[in-house]
Image 1 (tube, helix red, strand yellow):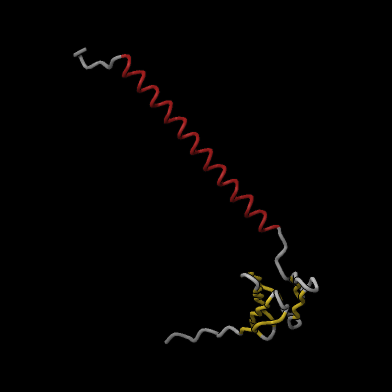
Image 2: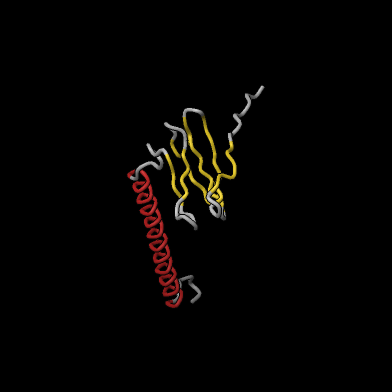
Length: 124
């Protein structure tokens, strides 16, 4: 047809393209909503859980020989974070004497080192 009207096959092709685009848009919208829901669940879970280390004067970790390693921290200290790397356990605790990081060898159950972080010097 030379008058510029679309043929029926072109019209059907256009309808299929529009239907496929609607399906893609609905699928992406559903993915966005699921991601938002996962973020909300995680935020609620983090906000309702108890903070780690509040009021705990010592921390224990599994050990091969006796089954337990105990680290005594100064009175009034709180454990800020615990990190495991291989057979080394790093415990970051904050107390009246300042911040301290203790590294324990889990194979022997002994302290490897106590690290006192250096405070940053003021910039000139």
